[in-house]
Image 1 (tube, rainbow, N blue to C red):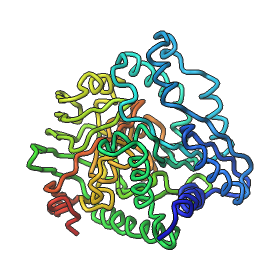
Image 2 (cartoon, rainbow, N blue to C red):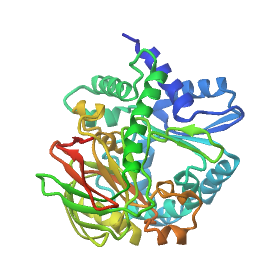
Image 3 (cartoon, one colour):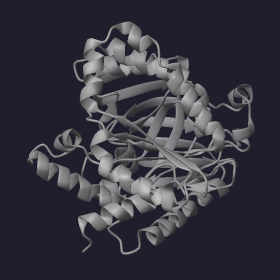
Length: 411
């Protein structure tokens, strides 16, 4: 069995060589929790071994973030620092690679004024719009990963001591990233091939409609544009460099027809959104738009999320993940969307990924709109997969095809 130090090193190496596929002379920007300094140093070490030009690190701290939201006046959240947005845009134009380490306490902002949270999120999204266009069009190399923090681990494993919880979360993450394997890079290459097989099957069959049903009450129809494309595993940036934007990743995904969603859907895993947990919720759609919603927990936060802009009330992503995915089989609710979305079929409120349309990465906003792609300042995944989720597909020539049966691939 590998030692912790070996797996930590392998994790950093896989992120640099597979996730980012860092190129000679490329700049790397890392956003990370300050608790993760040892891991960040490992990533920087491998980055420089790959002849990175420079490594920038932007550290964040949960305690300081919460202090800010409690103590700072509203005007602070209304104005996102322009210099931060300018820096990200400048690095994107230069062709830098971006690594984001998502590890915040899922209840970091519990009890904080929801107006501050929604105002801050909207201001940041507006300021970062140009950078996000680089990322969502896959013009740059970007990757989102996670490492444990004590507060997060304690929420995932509340019956363990903080130290035991922290170790258990590391062990769980190592398995999802496949660094417990003898050759993690080979394991990732095989994994990407398997995802590509599913993706190619869906694209070949030119599906135009999905019908979702589940015993929890989900009864939802989703339509697709004739030029939609299924994506998954990884993609190529503008320089034709392959990268894996999410680690872990188990999904294949596409964009729906913005106005082609009708019915009701229930969440199956908690949604960690901006330091708050939203759970026990359902959304009702008519012609693509959320017309009703309820939540047992975090309803006011969900309301603020849906009111970010008009596009926040529409779906931008449809993703398929079998119930037997390794993350689902772990029986751990990570309270972190990066992991939980890869344990479950999910949808995303907000902006669609242009590469999920044939030629979409070269389309203007107006052209994307004409092809039924949703636009928004947000892109927020929520989980809807279950052990008994069934999905029936309809092809472009009207034939029915079983896509999911009892939570698993049917083909």
